[in-house]
Every structure is written in C-alpha cells, then in structure tokens.
Amino acid sequence: MSAHDYFEDEALGKAFDWRLVKRLLRYLRPYKWRVALNVLLLLVISNSMLAWPYVLKSIVNTLKRPGVSADQVQASLFLLVEFFFGLILLRGFCEFLSNILINILGQRVMYDIRTQLFEHVQKMPLGFFDRNPVGRLMTRVTNDVETINEFLSSGVVTTFQDIFMLAGIVVWMSAFDLKLTLILCVSIVPVMVLATLWFRKNARTAYRAVRMRLAKINAFTNENVTGMKVVQLYNRQDCNLRKFSELSKDYRNEWFHTIFYHAVYFPCIEVLGTTAVAIIVVYGAYQYIFGAVSPEYLGTIIGLMAWTSMFFGPIRDLADKYNTMQSAMASSERVFRILDRPDEIENPDNPLPLDNFAGKIEFRNVWFAYIDENWVLKDVSFVVEPGQKVAFVGATGAGKTSIISLILRFYDIQRGQILVDGKDIRDIDKYELRRKIGLVLQDVFLFSGDIEGNIRLGEEAISDEKVEQVAEYVNAARFIKRLPQGYKSEVQERGATLSVGEKQLLSFARALAFDPKVLILDEATSNIDTATELLIQDAVEKLMRGRTSIVIAHRLSTIRKVDKIIVLHRGELQEEGTHKELLRKGGIYYRLYQLQYKDLEINGGKRPPLEPETAAYKRIPPDNDTGERKWQ
Image 1: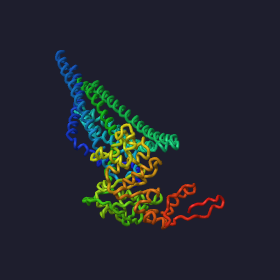
Image 2: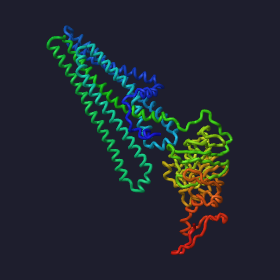
Image 3: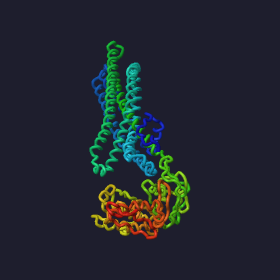
Image 4: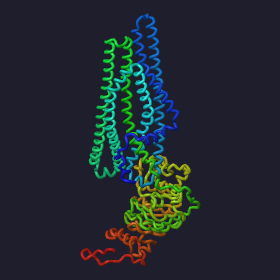
C-alpha cells in the first residue's frame, strides 16, 4: 500500500463523479419498486404544491368577477376552498408515506453498505491494518457510510421533487405570462448561477477538509483510549489534551468556513427571491395602471408571486444537496477504495485438500520483506516434522514472529516456498490452513462478552461440556470457578478485569478447544507472575502433547526440552540443533544463554544445571578488587 493510500483523506477528488454515482445507485437496485413508488409520491406532492397558487388566483378572480351574484361567488369560493384543503390533505398523506419509505430505504441501504464494508475489511491481510489506523477504518464504517446513506436515501430521491418543482414552476409561470417569466430569467437567474458556482467551489473544499479533520480526531481518540494505561503511567494527559485540543480546534475552524459560506449564500438567495417578487409587483402595477391588462390580471400577479417564492425553495434544497453530494463523493471514494482493494493473500481457484493432515512444515529458501527489499528473512530453510517440538530463538528483530505470520499465511513470501505436508501453502485454502493451526500469543486478545464465548469464539460445534473440559485440562477452571457467574462471567473489553496469567490460561483453553494439529506459542510463557508460572508450564506441556509444536521464546529455560532449536540472526538461519548440541558449539545460542544468566550469576543466583560434557562455561580469575568469581 502506498503513502497515498495511507493519507487518503488529504486527496481532493471530483466534485461530481458520475462513475461513483452510478456505483452508488446500484445499492438502490434491490429496492427499485420502493424507489419508484417514492418518486410517484413526490410527483403527487410537487403537483399539489404547484396547484395552490392557481387556486389562489382563481379565488381572487372570482371575487373581482363583474356581473356575478353573491350566491354564485359564494358557491365558487366554497368549491375552491374545498379543493384547496383537499390538496393540503393529499399532500400531507403523501409526505407521510414518502418519509416512511425514504427512512426505511435509507436504513436498508446503509445496512447493506456497512455489512459489505465490514465483511471486506475482515478479509484484508494484516499488512492493510499495519498501514491504516483503527480510527480511520472506524470512520469509514460509521461516518462515511452514514453520509452515503443520506445521499442515497434522501439526496437522490428528493432531488426528483426539486426538479419536478422547478420544471413545474417554469411551465406554470410561462403559461400565465411568458414575457414576465423571461424578464425574471434574464435579471435573476445569472446572478443566482454565479452565487451558486461560488458557493459550490468553496463548500467543496471546506466539507472535504471537515471530514479529513474528523478522521484525524477519530484516529487520535481511538489510539489514546486504547493506550490509556501508558498515558496515565507517563502522565501524558495534559500533553494529549493539548494535541486533541489542536485537532479539535482545526475541526472547529473548518466548520467556521462552511458556516461562512452558508451565511453568505443563503441570504443571497433570499435577497434574489425578494427581488424577483418586487419585479413582479412593479411590472404588474405598471401594466394595471396603464390599462395594458384586464382587472383579472391581479389574480395572475398574485399567482406569479406565489410561484416565484416557491421557485427559490428548491434552489436552496439543491444547494444543500450539493453539500450532501460532495460529502458523499468523498465518502464513497474512500469506501470504494477499500472495497476495491483486492485480498493480496488470494485463495487458489482449485485449492489442494488437507485431508489426513499430519502437520509437517517446511521452509525452502524463503525470502520475505514487509516493504520493498528490506529483507526480514533471507534464504531461510528448515523442516518441522509431524509431532516435533521446535523452538525459534534470536534477538529482537531476527524474524521469529515473521515466520509465524508466514506459516499462517498472513503475508506472502517474495521468494522460495513454504510447504505444509508437502503442499505449497499458496495452493491451499488459507481458511482451512488456519483451522488446522492454533496460535497462542504473548498479548492475549479477549473480546467483550463472557468467559465461555471467549473460549468458543462463536463456534457452535464446541459444546459447553468441551469448554469446561479444556478449561479444566489447562488449569483455567481454577480461577473461572471462583468468578461470580463462572463460565458466564462478563469479560470486559480486552479482558481488563483479568490478570495476565488468567488471560494466558484462557488463550490456552481457546486453542485446545479447536484441537489444532499444529500449535504455535509466541512468547506465550512470558509476562506471568510466579504463582501462575507452574500452571502455565503445565498447560503448555499438555497443549504440546501429540502435536507439531513451534515455540518462540526469549526465556531459554522454557525450551530446553524441545526436539530442535533453530537460531535466527538478522533474518538468517545461523544454527540448528538440540539444547546440548548448540551449547557445545559455543556460537550464537551459547552467547544468548550466557547473557541471559550473567546477571543472575553475578548476583548470587543459581544457573540452570549444565551438562559437564558441554564445557560451555569457564571460570575466570577472581576480581582483584572484590575477590568475586564470575562466569564467562
């Protein structure tokens, strides 16, 4: 993913992109009959609104009609009033139905887009999340989807009503007085077009800037809430508050810009509307005074004034909808950029089956880099036999965790092959592959819910009895039974109320519940208290029993009994052998072992027993000043 993808909010796209609009309209396709019905209702609403100035004109002309009796005038007025109130009732009923249809349609469309986006995000490789902050993705799934929904549900559909209104007003006015209508078009419309173009240009930039700053606020807030322990530990509250205040101030100031453009544009439209009415009054008075028109022309003037006042309402609505459309273009561009991003870890069209899975894993001349050719692994080759227990050791950054990610195919390699039971993992269904492998991480992630749900993880095939059985087997049942509601006890976000050791035991139970053929332990025995360490070690031994096991650990004392130890250094495989064999070599593993226990020996601690034949450690002469003997 490029830097452009990461800072995608900075980009300013088209104000109107027909390609995006057509794609958005596809979400209305499943509800086309609802859309058609709503358009029909809007057509009825528009015509009922356009008819009442004509009724008003008729009422005025009836009152001024010469040679008509009072009873005839009264009867005509009653008929016109009844018709007028009939239009009001019809319009109210149609608006009621239209609002219900629009809101239901909007919620359905928003559900479809949000579900599709969330489903696609879950399929993205880990590299995608490495480069996209969680807050930004949250903005896509929530704010951006809401903006698109507003455009599709109310923006697109109600635009028909505004278009019907404008077209109908022009037709009615032209039919009543074509000359006056042309005068209004020549005098008012050019100014209105210039004002609209000015507003559109500036509002476009301002609204995009508002959404960009909102995404930054969301990303910053998510990061700080997630890392609240570190924030409070290092007293970063004031510093973070200042940073948040700056982001919030930028967001506020951008909204000030949009408010300014609205404050200029909409009063301008009101002034133009008032000016148009004044032109009609002056024109009508001039015609009436000089006798160029009949007395009934007064009703025509009143009707034209009513239609003119109505004309600028749709103009204001369309200006508002332009803002909605502009925001929707920006939001849809970002959402579609995610939806169009293919899954870089593609599944084969005809995957090879993993029947009778034994658990053999082989790396053949593997080269891997996260970015370009900054190689994390360089020409790495090794074999893990079925049922074998293999440990990877090395300094931080040696590539140990990357090997785990590659086995699970979270990333794809650039060169070489990774084989599982003799089959290239790129030819295997990645979901089936991951179902065969259990992973226990150092930083255990627990979901909100209950203890039982965090062991089962939504897999209904795992019964309650099995959940309790695996918890008992890995020693997790001891603390679970002490909880108020046992397996139904609530787990807060990320397991905040559980200790590190308790969360680790739960992760063991989770792994065992899925009964994997291959087990990977990534620093799974670190960061635990002494009281829980024996329980953890016992659980680890039980988990590894009868399974192909891969262990990554800095604590070398935890891997002495494995079948093979592979030593990585700067992305290369440097040594391979058992604990005894590697100590005899006196190489990198020996130095790691020596460094790990150096401080313990100097401070009077006891080194784990070494086999005499290794001769790995030698005494050096006592220190001349202290007389203390040290290990080398």
